[in-house]
Image (cartoon, helix red, strand yellow):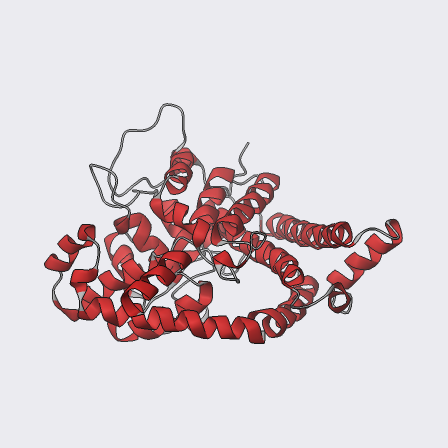
Length: 387
């Protein structure tokens, strides 16, 4: 039973390329399945979350992170009467556009692509699902529904208009502009509640697992976390209920409470906001002028303290910074090499190279190729081609 403000499959705006309806799957289920079976989704297995993928067996990769985001999104969407399949589809696609080496690789690619229309991983995800996945006879991309494309483009909020984040003030990334020109995604409004759920599920997942991975890496300790909001009370509760618990069980029990606190907070806030606004349709959600799926203000402030701690102790830790410099050099070496010598690109890319017109189009082809690399493949290609 879906709420009136949920995205109902039978009311979908459809697909850019008309297809026969499935007899046993809804449009959003088909979107989810196509994303899971895509090449880009498989490559997430060997892409960085924070640590370079091969550094340890226990750290999260983009794939394990994505699966955790999808699980949280389904849980929250189900409680709120939303379409769980659409929420899951957006969650599964939200990181498809990430480069190798996580945000470090994206920072390098942004700088390299600045003269050629910019680079943004959300926009690149759209480019992947509308153009770069080439498996179907009738179309390029995955031919996802409008609602899934909207969710990928706007799950973090409007990209244009008065409610947009100021960081979107410049020109649209070319990948987003191309898709939006082909099919208007209404970039000045908020996305559906399902897409908003996918966005908050991303926050929940990484806020939880980065604490876990940071502890395992030895960049900080449980003592450090006991001095922080949310995590400190969680460890205190575990110590009170299970005195003398061994280290790994104590860590897990505390962090699962942090996880639960975030999910419960999001659900409670959403229920209150929905009850107050009484939206009658998904368009009411889109035009509320604010997000309906969010953390409470007190928890948001507490999470800001945790994120600040993670930034200084994990994302900018000296050992991580050494690795950031190394992998930035890899991206900075591969991109100009392929633009200068596009014949080095694989054979299946040569038709695009031959058809491209000018250095801008060539740079975008090279960006597609390098951004699609896994960590290990990028390192191997740098060793092979750059020494």
